[in-house]
Structure formats: structure tokens, C-alpha cells
Image (cartoon, rainbow, N blue to C red; front, side):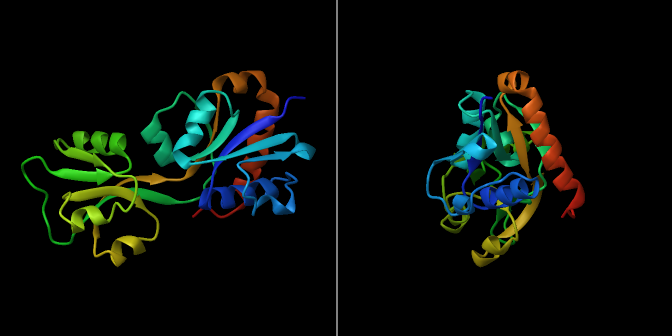
Length: 212
């Protein structure tokens, strides 16, 4: 039986997904949580895990180097990869929001928006009928309005503490985000039985835990 390869992002999503997999009855080794390896084999479950940057997970799944992946809905919206979403795992709750300095208005002439999510941000402001200039940044998004680079930012908000610590306020909530189980379309056809079993087992975990 061919092993299933699952791409997972490092960090919070990984930690919460590992808990779910264990609750679903998958026997993962004790050192799994603390591993610094990028590829982890779990032969007793016939599984292999690839640890990746969050934005890379859908790419690995789309191109078939991973059969399955766990990715935030924010990444799915931004990347628009050719994969299927199988299950909302209801983990890593957060949301995308528009934020900026308090008591400020956007420049009426070519307002600028800093974000890690240029596609999502462009679509959102286009739907609002606003023409904006998107500036893509890879880190420290909160600094953009402080130093006068942009009028607003579009970023992930979890507790709101990071915005508060940097003197920013939330202006608009764009979309709620949770992590999803995604699959390569070909893998889903070829290994449908095993993949559906995983979906069913994880679904049982979701059904018995409180939804935030």
C-alpha cells in the first residue's frame, strides 16, 4: 500500500493539526512534535509528512509531491491552487482585516495598502469600488502605516494584540479563517478510500470538540 504524503505548515497550524491527528487515532512518534526535520516518515501509519512554509503547502499539493495538505483559508484564497478542499478542521481560528492608524482616512488619490495577501486585498477593495495601490510586504506589515508607507494594511488578526501594541486599529473585517484539509485531485481519485478514511476520522474529532 502506497504511503500518503501530507504537507503541513510549521508553527501553530502544525501543532494543532498534530493534536487532531492523534485524537483521530493516528500513532505519531513522541518526538514528532519537536522534530526539526523537513520530512518525517511514520512507517507504522504508512504516512510521510513534509513540513513547509504556509504559502508553499498548496503548491506541493497541486503539483502532486504531497497527496494532502493542511493550509489556512487565507493561503487558499491568495494562492488559488488547483486542489480540492475536503474538510474545515476548525483549528487556528483568525481572520483577515483592514487596519491602520486610528482616526485617519485613506488618501483619496491612489491610497496604498500593505499586505502579504495582494490577491485577496485587491479583490476586496475592488468589490468595495475602491481603486488602491497594493504594496506586497513579507514581514512587519504593521510598520507600513506608522512610517507613512501606506494608508492601511490587510493582515491576519488573531487576538488583535499585535495591532494594539503597534498603535493600530481594525477598520474592516474581511473574512474569517480556519485551516482546511486539501487534496491533490489525482491523489483523491487514486487513493480515495484511504483519504476518505482520514476525512471521516478527523471529522469525528471535529464533531465532538467545541467549535470556537
